[in-house]
Length: 137
Image: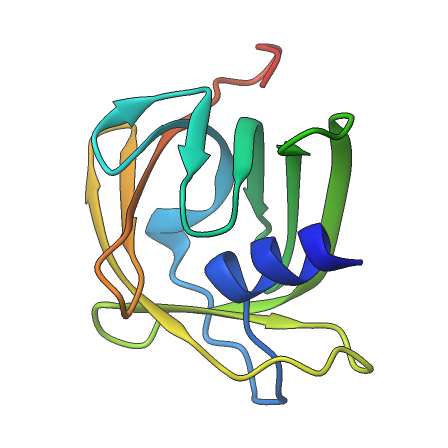
């Protein structure tokens, strides 16, 4: 599915490694902005609009990422990804579960209070806000 590939390429990785999950990052986050623009955000190069995103970084080194995205002229759909995460130094590496043929990508990360900023290798910035327990992402 083209949309899934675009989102995975933009936000995930593939490969295997031993997780080093930084405890400061544990939690659930809601996507608030892409490149300093609020959602919905249209990725012009791919003609896809991101409506919503959620990222859960679990203490056990597993993650879950969900996007609601809409290709131009199509219906919005939910894309779910799972795998393991690690945060060596200032990188956040999200590795998809086996069987997904995408190249590995690491994000630079910065955590300021409840705001998690992830910057991918092409300098796209994803701003996520930590969701408090009981709050809906």
